[in-house]
Length: 355
Ligand code: PMP
Image 1 (cartoon, rainbow, N blue to C red):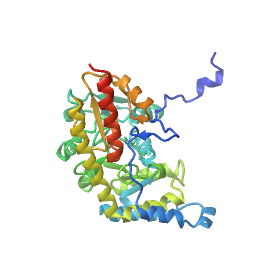
Image 2 (image 1 turned 120 degrees about the horizontal axis):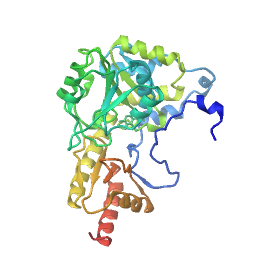
Image 3 (image 1 turned 90 degrees about the horizontal axis):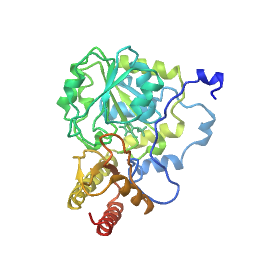
Image 4 (image 1 turned 180 degrees about the vertical axis):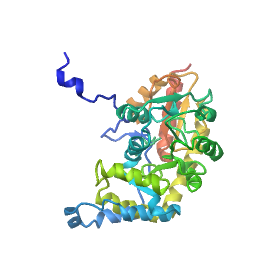
C-alpha cells in the first residue's frame, strides 16, 4: 500500500550505470580509458596541498576554466565546468530545455537523456535512427523545445560529419542544440568549430574518456557567453561548489599535457582499427566506430548468452537487450593485451559452440 506522503515524492526510473566490479576483471563495459592519466596528474595529487582542503574550492573554477579556454582558443566566459559531463548535461537540461514543446533526441542514444527529461518533467520525443543506425537530420527540422545528440553517438559509435551537425544547428536557431561530444577526441572534427557562428549551440565534452580521468569527474560545456552565464546561474542556484580542489588542480595538469593526450588517443585508435579487423575475421558485424568502443553483433551467436559467458570468464562488456539492439554488445577498446584475451576467448567460445 502506498503511504499518503509517497504520492508527493518525485519518482524517477533511474539511469543504470555499467557495473564497477571490485575484483580484477578485463573491464570493457563503461568506455573508460585503459591507460593512466598523464604524469602531471599523479604529481599534482602527490603534492596536493591538504591545508587548502580546509577551504571551499574556487566556485568559479577559474584555473580550470582558463586552461580549457586556452586549449580550445575560446574566451573563459564561454566555458562552464562540472562534475563529469553527466553533471554538465543535467544542468543543460535544467537550464535550456524549459519549453512546452518536446526536446528531440535519437531513439538509440545515451540513455541518460530520457532520465533527465523525466526527472525535470521536460516533454521529449525520440527520433528513429535509420536502419544503418544513422541520425536522420531532417527529423530534427521541426518545431521542438531543443535538440540533443551525441557525436559520435553512443552506443553506436557512429560519427556524423560536421556538415550534418551544422545543418541541425542551423535549422534550429530558435532553440538550444546540445552536441554531446564525450567521444569526439577519437573521431573527427568537433562542433567547437561552429561555436562562434551559432549562438544556439552548446558543445559538451569530458575528461572521462580521452583524458583517462573518469574517476575524477570533470566535464565542460562551451557556448556563447550568454548561454554559459545562464548555466552558471542555474549551477549557483543548485550547488556553488561542484568542483573539488583536487579535481580543479588535476584538470589543469591534464589540459597542459597535450602530447600525452594526443599519444593516448593515437594508441586507442590504433587498437580500435586492429580490433575491427579481428571482429570481422570472427564473423561479427560491427558498426563503423569512431569512438573508444565498438558496437558489434554476430549473426550466429546470441548476444545475451555471449555477454554472460564473457562475464563468467572475467571479461565485462555492456549489453542492453533493448529494442533494435538486442543482438548487440558494446565493447570498450582496452589495451592491446586485454583485447587479445577477449579475442582468444571468442575464438574458443565459437569453437565450443559451433553454430
Ligand atoms: N555522454 C555520453 C554519450 C556518454 O557515453 C557518457 C559516459 N557514460 C557521458 C556523456 C558522461 O560521461 P562523464 O559524466 O563521465 O563525463
